[in-house]
Length: 423
Image (tube, rainbow, N blue to C red; front, side):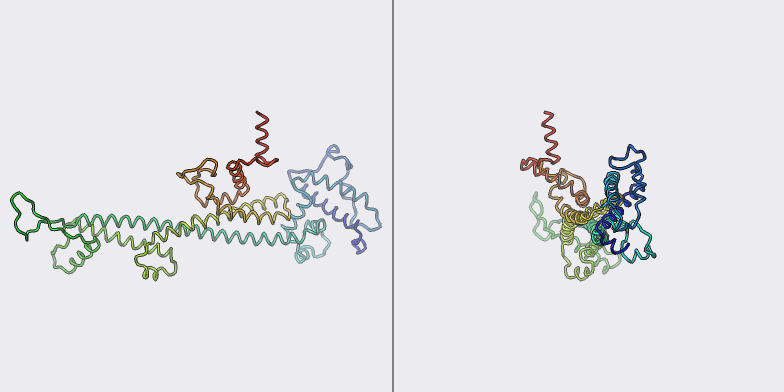
């Protein structure tokens, strides 16, 4: 096309209209759910029954000297008709979807079109909507970075969830080991030598009982440790345990002590993965259970819900964009809406626990989302995935608490008006 023709506004508009019409025709003909009109009765008023043939007969490129008014009128009417057939898609959404999903860079076009003469869907979209090229490139870059971010966020969330699960397992292991250890201590203490009468004092009077000499009970570990040392140092046949039951109880206590030490080491590795040896040496009497429970509570109730909320919002964004790409419904504003949904998903995931009653907790009517049996992480993921539904529910809670009338045109207002009419 000559520079003189390119400078003519009429030719420029005609070129854009024709490109958009071809995009619409391609979209409708390739969609099994849509079809072009077959009979003249299906053609709307203002278009001839052979409108499709006339569109195909429009020569290209148009010359500046030609009168293109009739052709422009035909293309505008045709575009309007095809937009109704392509619903919910339109020429603009089809063009933007093509520009986003297909590389429209100059290098790619030169590689795909070495002679520069073969048009493509991308070139038609670029001609029909040249102002969308920069927005499509920005959209494509942002979606790529968003996908990489969500993949990394998924790995971080999985690692964090695994860490919390491992911590809970280590806590349960140490709690069980500590309970078995305490039970073994009681067993050893129950086998100690009972108090005996004091034979060094004067004989008791007839009918009176002898005054027992109190026996100082030693800690069970010291008792068993001393017994083992005496057994190792004594001669063969020496008796250092008062009974077989005490021997068995000390052996059980020794095994429980080993199990507890292993459990404390496992929990210390979770608390301090790289410095657990020095930490255990410096803090031999540290309450590992209290420290681990505090960390699990912070991660499980504060950090993980935030992570799963953002992950749920990201999954909803990817699902929505994928559906819109399939249906050719992408628009430039979807990018900003997706980023806003991601931020809202993180907020709802972190705060959803404030509005949900845990099983067994006392609740006030109309102030919570109800009692659920789901875990906090699962509920946060659901809240992030369905941000709009969560905020709609919270708005309903606000209306019930403060007795606020719904705004005109809202679903609640329509439902209330229909209820009033029935009455």
